[in-house]
Amino acid sequence: MDISSYFDEVRRMNKRQLYYQVLNFGMIVSSALMIWKGLMVVTHSESPIVVVLSGSMEPAFFRGDLLFLTNYQDDPLQAGEVVVFKVEGREIPIVHRIIKLHEQKDGQMKFLTKGDNNQVDDRGLYASGQMWLKRKDVVGRARGFLPYIGMVTIIMNDYPSFKYVLLIGLGCFVLLNRE
Image (cartoon, rainbow, N blue to C red; front, side, top):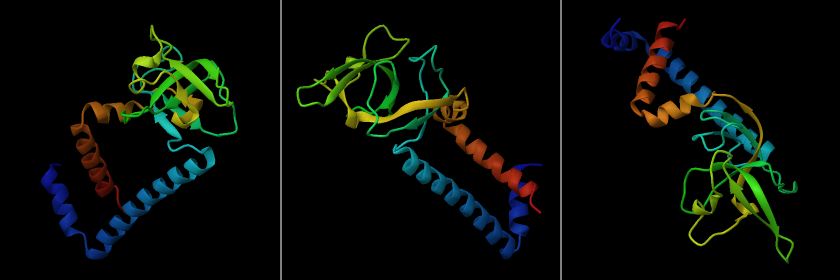
């Protein structure tokens, strides 16, 4: 079957079938958004699930691993734990391990991170002039992971045209397998 036959199939659908398909798609999208927002509330994290995008944390986590995060403010940070943090001026969060904690005179904690597979600490990744991270920089703490599940996300980022191929393929699958 070629692509024009799929479009012919859509044209042959009556309005009721087409509305039904659009409604089903809308329900799937809204359900996914509700699940995501629910996870944000339960985990106290703006991003409860992240994908490891580089090899800087090998052998603990590999590129494509899916991490589950929590960000409870009352849990104290500890040296050795893996955190996901955002740095001013960078859009993509970084997954690295806390290597040093520094308590200030006012009781607040500052900390230094490093990727397990990196030779030096992360001060070169922080904002200009920043020597330590603060609690406000933390997006979440790694609580669990699924290996390589996030490779689909990496492929879609590395090869943007793959998104469209996947979308067309899913659309064709739905059309062919509808009742």
